[in-house]
Length: 473
Image (tube, rainbow, N blue to C red):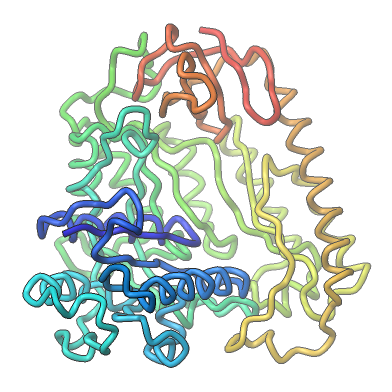
């Protein structure tokens, strides 16, 4: 039997889809090249913005139409944040849905597959079969290390996500995540270290630690590690990697050769970090351990203290700028990226200008920029002072324009620098070229003669095309 997934939203959803795919393969299922060939179609969804949910509704209508025509039989599953938020009520609008599994119900997926295997005739029946599946399980983390992608040229062959925590306790007033992901749960550090070790053995070179609020990670008194907070976890990871415990190689990141070394995790990133939880000790650990990449995504959301307070971000503009100053003075050659939200209810023109002023001060390498999208169930949904769509688009356009200028300025200033690059894959535009990424999260292109897939190489940033560097060895 075959499965097909459509994944929407954040890196956490991508990681969770990967773990669900592992569960399917462990039961002997194969991945279909298209939904038309699948016995099970699963949509892993996002609820952060209304537009994301509307897109999924369109896809559900498409698959419902296919099932109604009766040309083929398949089971339709909705998973992820939208499934958690709306639950079985979705079946009222889309009776063709066979199963709805939220973010805390992923452990049900193997049992769903088992039920379909035992009674294939029920697949695609749309008969609320999920009510007959085993009762809900407590949330548990899913390991990815059994199924590292191995397609030639695929970046995922050499980069992987490692979830370290789930959920969020912050309740930013615009954000639906705490309601669909639940409270924060941190993963056993022993499991994290083991997953990194196995990923290294499977050829992964770079990992990204994932969590909705990754730097609030806290494991207390279990698994023989005692109390482990985020900087402690980073220390454990650095100790294990520098000692070569993941592969036995013991190669330091600074020892970049001619491209022949292609084993072991050597770079570590993390997403997403909250400014209020970014401790001086975390900065110190990153600065002292070269395994941590010199790029940090530090979500600011806004530049106005009044709006930050209304958003319940729990820091001020001044505190954010002090953190940026500390990061840059402590960590050499650091690049920063961020999230910026415009058009929050009550945002005045003066408030908006504070965003632009902050951007000019920090000069982010890149930003994820969007306008406020009301989400029913959040505190901000009922706030007065909604900003018109026209004004939101106008303000967002200004933010995007400024960020583009900052990105180009920073990238141009890097031309001529010698950097370390992880070679991730083959260029889609030219099979004679490879693509890679620097520690600062800059994309590069290099001739296939200059490097090999999965290797770390020293290259010179020789020119810039768009936002991508071309490199000479």
